[in-house]
Length: 286
Image 1 (cartoon, rainbow, N blue to C red):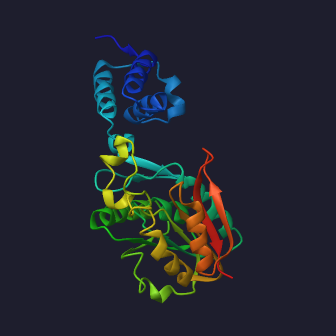
Image 2: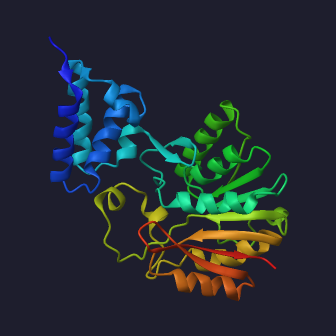
Image 3: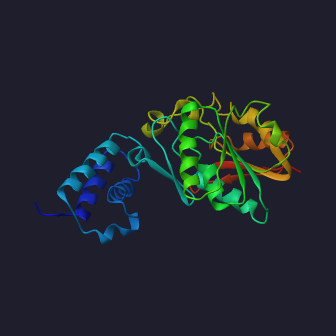
C-alpha cells in the first residue's frame, strides 16, 4: 500500500479538533503528529509521507483528543522549562502559564550560590524539577499531599536523576500544616507554588473539569482555602532576603498580595500572564 502525505492528514486532524471546540486545534494536531513520529514539531515538514498504519494510529489519537481528553494524557508528557515530565490520570497537568513563575524564580536565583528551593503542591514535580535542571547546584525540596501525585512526582524525580539532574527531595505533607518542614525554617532562598486555587463554582474546560484531580484544582468558594493558610508557612521557611512566588486564580491577585503583606512580605508585586490576566504574586522576606 502506498504511503500517504502527512500535511493533508494534519489539516484533516486540525479540522476535526476545531469542530470539537478545541481552541488551539492546529497546535494540538501537530503536537500529536510529532509525538507519534518521535520528532520535534518543527521537523514535521521534513516528513512528507507516512505509512498507512501510522495514519491509522494518528487518527485514533486525534479522535481521543476530540473527546477532550487532555493532550498530555495522550502523549504522556508535559513540558516545563527545558524538561518534560510524565503525566497522566491522577495528577494535575502543568500549564504553560506556570513557565512565567519558573522564569521569575530562576531570575531571582541568579547570583545565589547553592540555593535552597521549596516547591509547595508539586503535583507531578514539574516546577521543582525544572528548577533543579536549570540550577544543578540547588537543593530542591518538593511537597505534595496526594499519594497518587506523589507517585508521579517520585517517578519523574527518578527519571530526571537518571538523566543527570540533581535529585529533588520529595516530602509527603500538607502545605497548610504549621509544622511542615520546620527543619528548613529561615533557610530557604525561594519558595514557589502552583497550588489548588480555582473557586468551586467556576466553569472549566472539560480537560480540567473531567480529567484533572478535583483536589488539585479547586480550593473553596473563593479559591483561597490553600493559599491563605499556606502563606504563613511560606514566610516561615524563607531566609531573610529570600522570596516567594505563588500562582493564583485571576480573580484573586489583590487578595493574595494582601495576604503576603499581612505575613510581613515586602516588595509584593502582582504578575500578569501572557493573556494579560493576574497570574502570580511575589514577595520578599525583609
